[in-house]
Image (tube, rainbow, N blue to C red; front, side, top):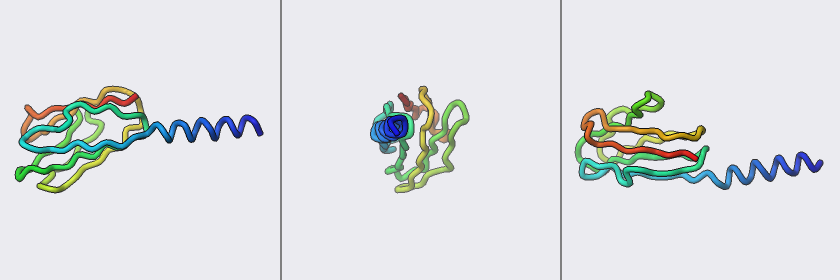
Length: 100
């Protein structure tokens, strides 16, 4: 019984650490450019520009299609690490997600 209680407490603590984040795409920039979240969190990118943009990880883990104005793309980060990404249409647009 004690072990089950401890496992439930640990599961609850881990879930409580997960925090979702939103990155806006505006004026050909990701804002914020760098975001830090806990494992299990979802990051959502929302395009507020009148031009299409993509969100593509440099290591191929995630890739959105072209996002038109007011469209969003979300990805759930389950593993710790640093995930760099860019817009493949406008490669000077870069950012990163750090997962702890």
